[in-house]
Image (cartoon, rainbow, N blue to C red; front, side, top):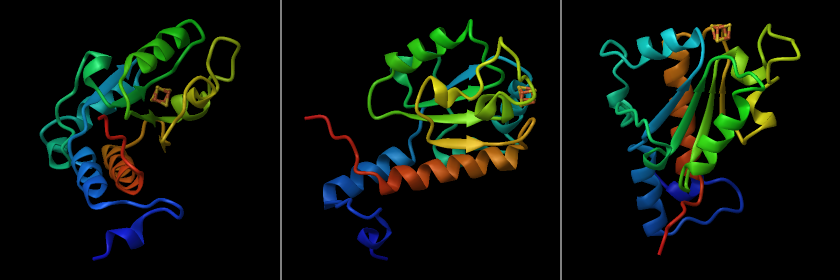
Length: 159
Ligand code: SF4
């Protein structure tokens, strides 16, 4: 296997960068920002039956400073949006964001003045998982897509 062949065009990965990216791929610390009914499906996904530990992502962190993946789960109102943005800002680089469910992706069926019409209007999103709510299998697929994306990115190495 040639890892360079899998890299996105324009990205050059040295040996040490490949090792760091590999480590980041398989040691994800998720901060679940849960506001609504999709939370039930998150709990299901995080249960032993679906075993997120297989992906190195089994241990949720409840401090943004200890997390590198922000998993936004549920409807985001304009009132809570500044809190979400603040949580994101408190996370250290490198960090990634997953939009979990239709509400976070687009506002879902809450086409109203009170609801954020997609969290990508307030912070950058790396992976969108559609569904109302998404099934655990879809969530795991989204997680694997994020891992693939991380593996192709040039890692942030703090010196
Ligand atoms: S996508 Fe559906 S299940 Fe998820 S928070 Fe919105 S309304 Fe609830």
